[in-house]
Image 1 (cartoon, rainbow, N blue to C red):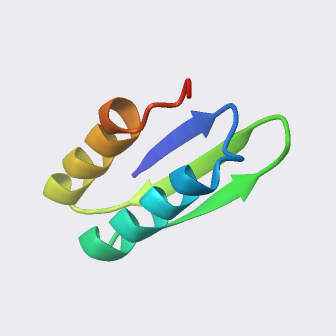
Image 2: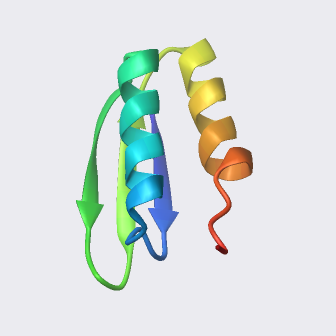
Length: 64
């Protein structure tokens, strides 16, 4: 299980990437979206969690 704090999740491309990757990796969880901060809570197996963390921490460019 992992919890991610995301400052701004308003970009539709980010939401799409997160949603598609969740479906592909069969990850479960929820996302709480608020204008100031968003919280993403996910649960997965070890391999899926590694890949999902890599997506959120390295592959998505949050500063764009």
